[in-house]
Length: 318
Image 1 (cartoon, helix red, strand yellow):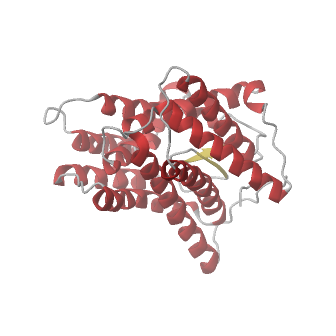
Image 2 (cartoon, rainbow, N blue to C red):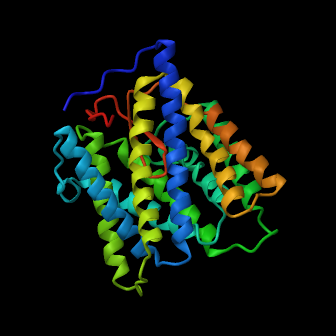
């Protein structure tokens, strides 16, 4: 497995365009994956849905590795403390986010999960001793104001779905913090470990559930959802490593647009004006506080690029 080349200071226009398109396509892939899970969320227990989708994901990942001649240590999840921690936080984020889709519209859930990178700023300052610039501090504060504009405390009952999506945000942030400490583990290995752990916990969780018999349509939705997750991870990884990070990262927030479109077309729901303004504020806050340089990236299952230390040696999924 070859180490990914360092991201150059500038890239040719054609390569930059390809990177931007990859970021847009990868972000859309994650939103489509979430939409497919939401289409089945009211019919099936959460554990069953995650377990079946995880099995499809493992099968697709294995096929991909066979075509590439790549090898992955499937037991790495249980032998590496850091990889295990990351996988557990990924499991928590996935479970709570998918469960929250039962009671939240896709645009609202997607917008709130987009605040995870802002929470990482706070966690890194508190637990890792990182210095936070005024730009990132102001962006983080504005982002949380945007979340309040979406949730609108007092105007609607505080439901379990809101608690779950905030739990997903917390797990995503902790996952990103742990990822920064993972060295010499390939991106493919990290993705495989998270996929295996998610499927395994979904299977265990489903033992306490009353399984429902899926139709062919349901199985296809789970299959395509898992495929969109893997495609999204590959595209966003390619985008961040192939283009100028300061150019491609802002296009991560196109996910808000995709979620608004799908929410309107499929479920005929649209957030109110204040909530839409909150989404725009979160996107603006994220853009304002973005780092301009990073060497490596791992992608979480909700499409959030996680910047790793320069010493990591990832295998590029592309």
